[in-house]
Length: 206
Image (cartoon, rainbow, N blue to C red; front, side):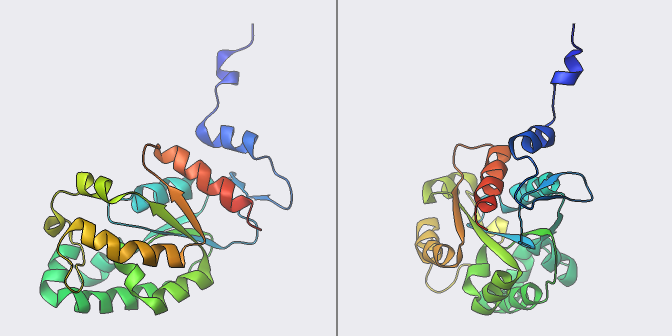
């Protein structure tokens, strides 16, 4: 009788079986299948609560890439949470900080989770585009409302006359769509399923 353990594979092992090394793909130092041929980085954009940090961290593990959370970098450099920085400097002042941090990121073979307000920063987005492929993690406005009942506590940049989630969504969604190389619909999907979809679809874009 075959050992049951031999037929039980981890998520990474199943991924490698589904996407075998072919067409120039290679193994990373972490030993995982890297199908992102010719692509240095994957940059995630999307609304607050879309899952950029969660998906980014898991996708980086899957691909054997590094992981950069832009919001965490800002908080580390400024020594304060995002909500405090927005309160201290205002929306435009915070965006200046975010622009500086984003333009200063230099990375190879990383998954980069941007802040939701990065879409307001054309120079930063141009910089990200030079670093790799931009993936828009899309959720609908209703889902954002469900996930974040209190935007103030979260630390969200409300620019101009925007006061509600739906107004924020209407302002940002066209920008995400403009910058995205790929859009992934995330509602009703597990983190692993989203990661598999990103890897598979970007693997086809050579």
